[in-house]
Length: 318
Image (cartoon, rainbow, N blue to C red; front, side, top):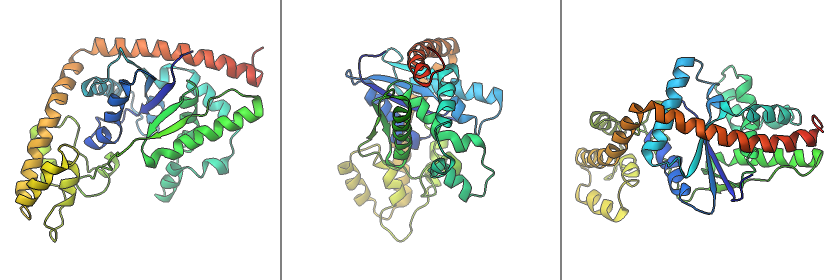
C-alpha cells in the first residue's frame, strides 16, 4: 500500500467541463498534484455517470474527452494516478458490502436524493445509493484527504460515517478521510446569474472557441441598475487581480459593452492554450489509452490489497 498520505478525487464523464468546473475543482487538482508529500488518485467516475449517461458510444467518447481534458489543464500522469472507476472491480464490491450495513432513512438524507425528489423525478436506485459507491471510492485507498467545495462536504461525512460503522461492526479496517475544503473556491456564476452548471444550460465551455466565448459573455445577465455588472465582474475576477479590475471597472462604469468586450479578450487568452493542448491530446488516442490502462493497473493493485483485508474482516475469506 502507498506510504505517502493519499489524496483522492473524482469527476464524472458527462461532457466537456466548463469554466466553473475548472475554477471550482480542476485547477486545484493541478495545484495539489505538485505536493510531494501526498500521492494523488484522480478517478474517472464512469459508473457514477451511468445515472445520466446511458449510451455506450457516448460514454466511451466522454471518457476519452475527459482524459484529454485532464492532460490539457496540466495534470501530469507521471505524478498522479488517473484511472477509470469501472475498471477497478473493488469499487462496486465494496459498495455492496456498505449497502448491507446502511439504512434507507440514512440515505434519504443525502442532498442529491432530496434534490431529485424535490424535482418530482423518478429516482433510480443508483442516485439513491450514490453516497455508498462514493464512500467505497474514497475508502478503498485509505484516503486521508479529499478536496471538495463547501457544498460537497456531505460526501465526506457519508464516507466517514460508513467507515466508522464498518469499523464498529467488523473491527478497525478503514481510515477516516478528512475533507479539504478548498480555500477561496469561487462559486462561478453562469450566464444567467445562477451557479454555472450543465443542468442549467448556463455554461461557458473550458475549451470554447473565440466565437463561443463571445456568445457566452454577451449573453451574461446584467443588472441595469448598477454601475458594475456583478456577474461579469465575478468571472473576470477569476482571471485578473482585483486591483487591475477595479481600475478597469471604474474607468468603464456603466459601460457594460466595453466591460464584456474586455472579459471576452481576457477569457479567450486564458482558454486558448488549454484549447490547443486539448485538441493535441485528442489526436493521440493511443496515448490516452495507455495512460488510463497504467492507472487502472495501479488502482486495481492498491484496491485489491485493501479488499483482502475487508473480505477477512467480514468472513468471506479466511
